[in-house]
Image (tube, rainbow, N blue to C red; front, side, top):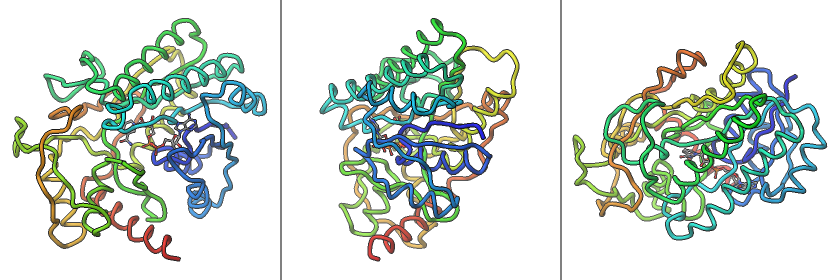
Length: 343
Ligand SMILES: NC(=O)c1ccc[n+]([C@@H]2O[C@H](COP(=O)([O-])OP(=O)(O)OC[C@H]3O[C@@H](n4cnc5c(N)ncnc54)[C@H](O)[C@@H]3O)[C@@H](O)[C@H]2O)c1
C-alpha cells in the first residue's frame, strides 16, 4: 500500500484526512508533537477505521528527529504537511512564535523530502493568502494581497518556500491546497473538531457558547459591506476537505506530466455570513442562539469565497456537503464528545 506521512496527524484536518486516506486504500503514518492536540485522536481514528496508525511524537522544528523519522521509513510516497499554529489573533500577539514554528517545520520537512527522495508533497495553505481581495469568487489566479496577519503571512511565505523548492527540485511533485473555512465532523459523529485553548474557530466557539461552557458567541463586526453586515466565509465540510487531499495524491499518481507545483482552492464556492451560520446552527439544535455583537477583529477580511472549478476539473473533486450538514454533524459530534469526556 502507498504510504503517506501526515504531519499534524492528531489535529482537526489531519485526523479526518487520515480516515479518508485509509478509506481510499492508502497506508498512513502520523507525526505530531501534540502541542495543540492529543493522541486521543488516534483512538478515535482506530474506532472508525479499525486501524492503529503508527504515530511519532516529534517536533518538526527538530531537524535531526525529523531526519530520523524519514530514515526509518524509506518507502514514503508522499507527505501532507498540516502541522502549524493556526490562530489569527494569537499570531498578531505573538508573531515570532508563528514564524518560528510554521516556517522552520516546513523547511525541515522539505529538506527531508529532498534528502529521502519522497515523490509527492501537499502543503496546507489557506485562503488567508489572498488577503482582503477586491473581486469574488477568488480563483487560483487572483493576485495575493498583503497578508492581514502574521499567520496569513506564514502561509504566503510557506507557499514561496515551496515554490522555490519545486523550481530547484522539479522531480518532487507538489500541490498547494488553499483551504477555505473547514467545519463539521465525520458522519459517524465519533471524531470532530476540539476547540484549543484560546481557539477562535467559529463553529466550536458557537457550540460551547450555546452550552454555557464559555461566553456566548460574539459576532466580530456587523458593519461590513456585506448583505447583513457580518463577515462572509466559505464553510467547507471537513470530510470534503479531507477528500481533496486523497484526490491530490490520486491525481499525482495517475496523471502524466503533472507540473512540479500546482495550486488549488478548496472551498464550496458559496459565501455564508456569520448571521446565516447562526441560523444554520439554530436549525441543527432546534433552538435560538444567544449571542452578542462586538467590534471588528484585527486581521479579519470582510468577505471571501472560492471558485473551485480547477480542483473539480483536474482533481475530479467537488464538495458533497451543505452548510446545514456541516452544522448538524458538528452538533452531533460535540454531544458525543461531551459524553466521552464524562465517561
Ligand atoms: N482549521 C482551519 O480553519 C484552517 C484553515 C486554513 C488552513 N489551515 C491549515 O491547515 C493545517 C491544519 O489545521 P488544523 O485545523 O488541523 O490545525 P490543528 O491545530 O488542529 O492541527 C495542527 C497540528 O499540528 C501539530 N503541530 C504544530 N506544530 C508542530 C510541530 N512543530 N511539530 C509537530 N507537530 C506540530 C499540532 O499539535 C496539531 O495537532 C494548518 O497548517 C492550518 O494552518 C487550517
